Length: 118
Image (cartoon, rainbow, N blue to C red):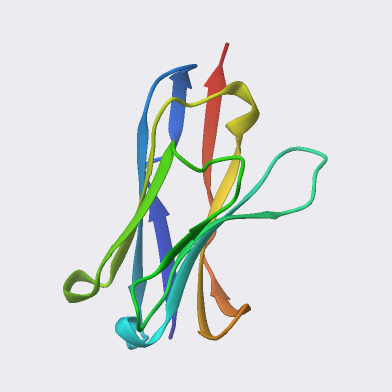
């Protein structure tokens, strides 16, 4: 059974930092592109960042570029999202996702809440 389990969310003041983690069970982790998405109240889910399975290339949404860093540890089946200089508009539920083929995310975590107060 495939499970993606996120952790690390919470409440932080603007300008602060949080580190999200996602552990993938039941998949050959290194074979998957791993990504983070987020969904704010009343808005559609949006892409935040991903880490390619093969090349290790990372891609970021413009809104988080320079503030967030995605990293992965294939030996521990874990992907992290380091979030710095957080803004109130970063408030959302953050989801981890796994894709075997480009932009085809087959597996999703349950989400972790990030709230940034002004």
